[in-house]
Amino acid sequence: MSAPYRVGIVGCGAISRNHLEAFAAIPQATVVAVCDVDAGRARETAARWGIDGAFGSVEEILAAGVDVVSVCTPHPTHEAVVLAAAAAGAHVLCEKPIAIDLASAERMVAACDAAGVRLGVLFQRRFWPAAQRLRAAVDDGALGRPILGHASVLLHREPEYYSGAAGTGTAWRGTWATDGGGVLMTQAIHYIDLLQWLMGEVVEVHGHAATFTHAIEVEDTAAAVLRFASGAMATLSATTAAAPSLGVSIRITGETGATAELTEFPEGTDGRVTVLAQGGAVESEPAHPAGVDPDVDLAAINGQLIPHHTAQIRDFVGALGEGRAPAVTGHDATAALRILLAVYESSRTGRPVRLTPTAPEQTA
Ligand SMILES: NC(=O)c1ccc[n+]([C@@H]2O[C@H](COP(=O)([O-])OP(=O)(O)OC[C@H]3O[C@@H](n4cnc5c(N)ncnc54)[C@H](O)[C@@H]3O)[C@@H](O)[C@H]2O)c1
Image (cartoon, rainbow, N blue to C red):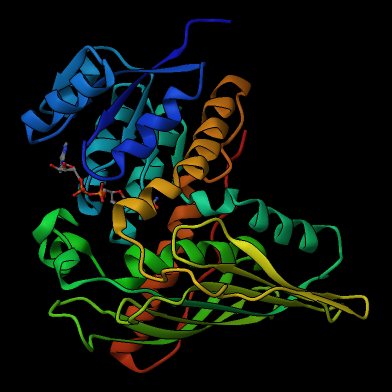
């Protein structure tokens, strides 16, 4: 085996653990440096994981010589890190959302293309076996071309999640400037991505977003109708004001008449196919099994995502070796961002928003 890719992780907060665990499970890559604007946090992380390099900035990580940069910082800071990494010739794996505005996302994709480096963005829920099963049911014709979809995202966040108290988050959440949005930008974006992955490109969005129960600037609740290039349609409802959480369900009906529903309950557990109705038979299991605590602590939610982060990061590292595009590209992440930004615009104007079709992606 050739020498493992040298990886630097930028941002040592909550989600960095998923990246550290994932890379630890992948022999083709080794984390050689971490950094955080809180240099003490970088030092603690490096000491805990036996990593030599602990720095205060991405520039120092790049100067140490890395092939791959993992970006685990708050959303609006992603762009500067990605541009610095691309300029230094490092491949980039960026946490979702890619950015909080479209121009920023487009600059990131363009910079990586121009530098000839790969850009992957974390949408690890695509790697659930159940999500792959839904995708196979679309691809192999069991569902046929999707005609109707639904994503229901009914989550619970404590006030401390937004205020940054009690170690359940940091103070950047909940404002337009530092978070860029609420439930759509941070939680529902995963399921918007699943809808576009299963149903194709979204060309029109009509929606509403509002803040009902949390003391935040950004929305805690949103509803939208999406229309796809194929003519198919889907509805989306999302909130962080549910108590207790009812988790997530994604439902797709195809033109064969078959329907599949995938459920994530409690939040953070692997998605399960709970309904599969095809060929005259209906297989179903309860979406909300009895006796389960529906409200899971955020650290436990992130912990349960580790196998799926690992699967996506393994794909990314494999893509580097094989000279192919990763499973989730900057282009895909930009498309998901466009959809949720259109919900904000539609909510502001009271009108549907038309999305112009995107140029096909270069995948070679
Ligand atoms: N894929 C998922 O399911 C998932 C889950 C949780 C978080 N995330 C994403 O990961 C990102 C980070 O979220 P988090 O919950 O870990 O946040 P966090 O606040 O726990 O950690 C962010 C860390 O980045 C550091 N930081 C801020 N700016 C920096 C910079 N310019 N350079 C270096 N370090 C910097 C902070 O000091 C902090 O330690 C967000 O974009 C979030 O959406 C993704």
